[in-house]
Length: 184
Image 1 (cartoon, rainbow, N blue to C red):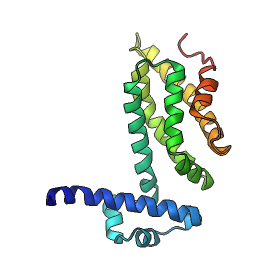
Image 2 (cartoon, rainbow, N blue to C red):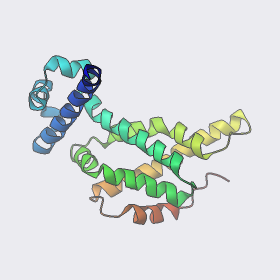
Image 3 (tube, rainbow, N blue to C red):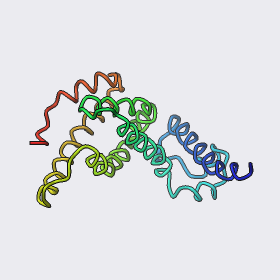
């Protein structure tokens, strides 16, 4: 019993810090929020904050990483990985985190998500493509992936900025209709 409490206490502190940061971000500018204020709001000691995080951005990153891990797991469960199904899964994930994303957009912090997207691209690419025939092909694939990701991120950012009104099905339909010259 005590073992379970030891395991869950750090997670509880992290969740409280995240919830407190979201509440503070809904009330004031992100850059004005101090670690002391955040810790007080979460009812944890400053030392507890620094035991888990180095910065406020790391608190945000906690949820972003969780979201991408869920996304990868969901993609692995798809019976078929057609473009429509992958796009729909992506926007279903975004819809689940829409309030968080809207808050990040309000504070001009979507770049944090964009950086994480770039980190997950190689993993996602491995899930959907065959091994390249040569090193030269691998380099081309890297640039093609970056090109495609830029377009998907642009659409994602526009969707968030417009209030995330379209459903995952509508967004999947829109995105899957785009013909990227990637697999030629």
